[in-house]
Image (cartoon, rainbow, N blue to C red):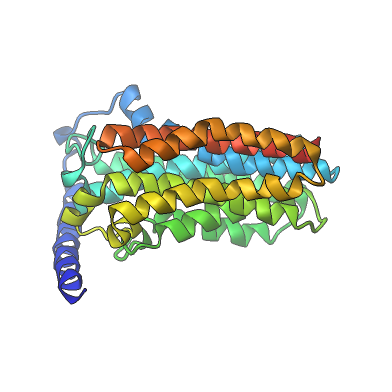
Length: 324
């Protein structure tokens, strides 16, 4: 362990120097030295395949709000705008931060905007900040309409957490804490936040649903980081997958996508419609098989896609089950 710590510390010191150097270049670089990204590249940088993770908690929270006769279409749509813009903002922020940090030098797969070296990092940073600003505006409107001003503090914390996932001097995504924050913000906060934005009724169902949705988000991150174990080690990025190793990470993934089905198994005794949630297993079981047996990055990318859509399907069926 001490040898590994020395290795990561040495890597981290090199990356801190690279961050300062690259950030300085990005600040003073001539814009003519870069080309303007195409629309296709901006869309690719937004990583739209991750958006099901933004839709899932809002749908689950809205479904339970409907179950207690508190559903508001306006507040649900505003919560969805916040979640989507935060998700896209995080993706652009990761692109910028990993790019200037040099992490993407070891990346396997298509180059990112900043990591390509061809796009001005300031443009990517502006895109991230614009998304965060848009999320803040939508959140403020939701707060004004609902009258629940304590959501302002929650929104500020969410934006700060989004930035420091890979941003700042000590990003928590580089310290094996990514899964913890993903569970909290893409599970508990997003799901329960959508519900309590619309209702003052305290129900335990919302927290179990939030935990279930959060586990799916964690599973997506585990699959992503398991694919990148080798390159993350080279980059000095200490993710949970790097610490656990390949096999343990794959087993943890399986636990994260199967545990959510305890919710319909238990609450199905009281909400008969929750039996529909088990149809999500048609996506989950193949993803588990591929995760446990896959050898190539391409296979793990398929796991990411299946898990994202499984999370969305799970949330939709969960919402229908509770609301019905």
